[in-house]
Image (cartoon, rainbow, N blue to C red; front, side, top):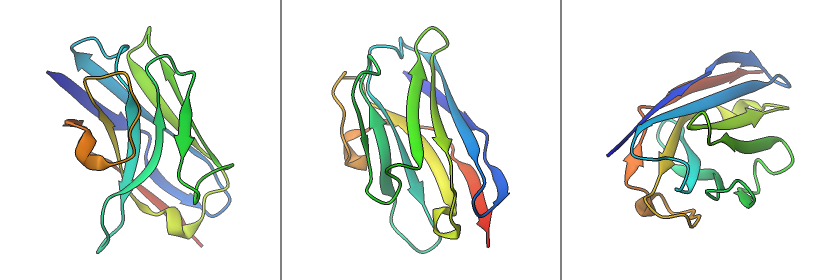
Length: 124
């Protein structure tokens, strides 16, 4: 079992920045791929970014490419999402997720472990 806890969400003005953290406990997190998803009210959960277990490979949704950066510190069992140049359309609950294999994925159905989510609100 893996337990994930997100933090770092909040209210920020458009153009601002936030850094989300996802701390893992339980089984060894460092050998698993991880990802961030988000869900806005009335919308389906959508892929934001994913990172390989080494941190050497990453993927981003087109909507966040060039503004968001995913990273991980395996010594701390933590994955991060640095969000810059935030826009009102980035407003959502952000979830981190992991799967018990090292390969990345973009489909939420591929991930078996989820955090509780952290709210990000970007005002215009």
